[in-house]
View 1 (cartoon, rainbow over the protein chains, first blue to last red):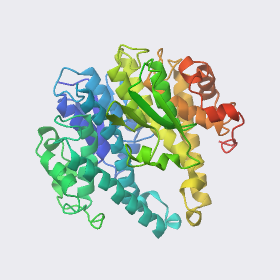
View 2 (view 1 turned 60 degrees about the vertical axis):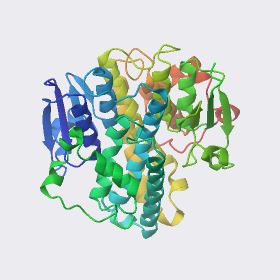
View 3 (view 1 turned 90 degrees about the vertical axis):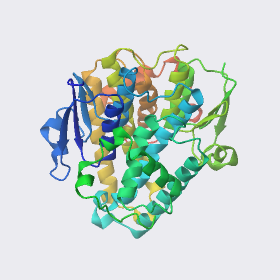
View 4 (view 1 turned 135 degrees about the vertical axis):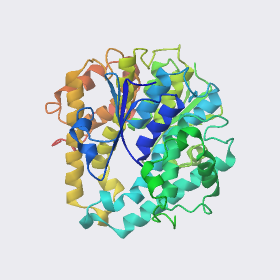
Length: 225
Length: 225
């Protein structure tokens, strides 16, 4: 039980989802879960700003220790609860190297995904250019090819090899987000296989974004990617 | 000695510098150091592409293990050489939490810095807008205020507290880069104090960018920030 922990999070946000998965994997259920709404601007509310000057989610507290960066929370939980739940950093050096590599490459994937999906939201109307949209889409396509290749070469079934690791905790939510936004399974078969194979993992199933469960139909923004 | 390691890097690049510092801190001298030139496009050369599909530096090999993400290399080295050189992850839970938080917040600082410094290089001429330049500069100013506040509140002298940690390894190069590009020491006194206090640390002194030593005069792009 993790009664001395509080997680403020938003549904569907990949960074929030990473933390939710890590908490499940480490058997840290029972924490104080505060689901906030991005639409209502609750990530800018005082309760968030009190521990997070940037007003972003996730925001996390363990006792009086504050961690608002999803990679930070996941790394901290694994380090503090090493012998509890599933081990998320492999002992094997080769698998560990691959884990760290994939985990941080996941940030590049997330960035290229955000550049496409959030373009109209992030870039003011007068500054938008079709050429930028095209370039961002091409960058995402190139990035996805790299991941398709990684998953093809293996060793699999997980991103770092035979074990589910921090690489999967941190990258899976981005991959699920891509498919939620219409990524074509046929055009990215290995990425789709990875996505589908992990849907039923208990930590992922238990934390599937509630708003996605309510309206299972996603968007089609990425259907041509 | 680290003869089974190869690091391909570029002078002045904060991500490369992080890895150089981590190698020093872990007493991993003697690695095969391959200094490449961004200006000559050597980061896109075949020797880099052979282990890094994105053609970026740093690119790092330990035996046949490949790690190209600077945060990944630093985390891997600390994990694999736990009892060698300086310990870069504190045992103390509170300090460890602060370390992970600052370490990953460092990516936000680096991103906001890059949005300003690389604007003309990253954004094609026809897509540039004064309004974006202004917004990026304001975002960097707001970000720097957060760090000034952190360093004021302490506990210091390092980013996570009494020990030099992965937070310093990963954030210091960005802070040095800001001053290299003209950030005003008077306007950011705590950040400047932190910057100056670490200049003489052996790992940092030994890895100071060779191109900066050759031409000590930086640029003034950030003088009004």
